[in-house]
Image (cartoon, rainbow, N blue to C red):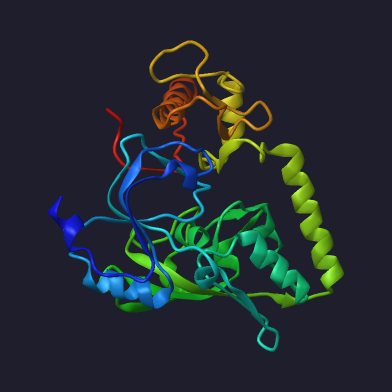
Length: 310
């Protein structure tokens, strides 16, 4: 790959053939051809503007909603992390919370609560970052990113700055009209409504307690596996099809390492021995089984990226 020897000089890190499994909650997957960890927004901009157009680029956040396939990811994977991309500030006069793409959604919720701003409590129940929330209109318990976002800005594939207002995103259920890997977010602005900080904290505590008792948050998982079809709950469809707690192996080995959680049957789990092929294979097998039994299509909510293993 001659492009590997022609990459722009950076102030951050360029890691070659870097395993990506440790960067994801499932802890599976092959390496990135190149993993770029920018030092700050300027480093990101300069890299994008100098990177040859033919080199594929893939964004990766905290890895809470992604399966990296066993063959790894072609091109450059960009992971914006650390203080330069994770800061959260509050403009109390304007009721605004400003956050970087690496800021955890839960940290944004807590900053809003501390400032006495309501409307962002649901973010405490989302196991991801602001960048991921922008990409997929993340939400839970009846609220979505679209309900609180004012605007966001970042760099496009050429390093040009782009500002997106809420209406520009074309938000729908777990989807936006921003083309995949066309934007690398640097900052987002959310608006809350003044409220008593204690009341906001109480509502967040309720969400946290509900999540801890109903979701396998301490397992190697990735959040909700499938989107809810109109008029249906994915967990119920998976459960009624008989897949709750049933182990699976894509290779047919006995006692496979992938399964849907006994606690919440829309949560895919790596019990410790699963490969990416096991996890994705189980998901696709369940989708086919549910379709055959009910005529209902289950669409993936978890992103699957990269090349299949050999």
